[in-house]
Length: 103
Image 1 (cartoon, helix red, strand yellow):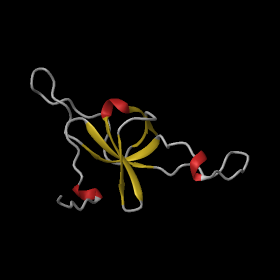
Image 2: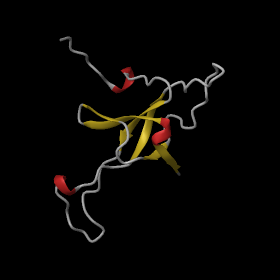
Image 3: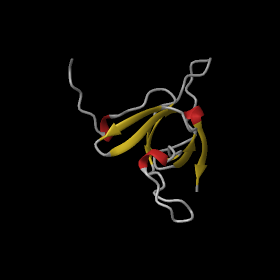
């Protein structure tokens, strides 16, 4: 099997896919209790690193993507494919799985 070396700059999403850097999970609760790794919830917030060109419409034209590189987004909890590059966590997901952009 061939080995492929990936880094953030080599990942180019296709269609309506979005490549998102996952923000770290909370280390402690609002009351100050430290959480072990097994009790942490999967983060749903991240920063858009790369976007695809958009999906094709029925007439053959491309639909413009609503998010752009640098946007902070909220996405569905179990959406996409988790990817680990080095020590950083990323998720590759469809644009329809993005729920909102954050200011």
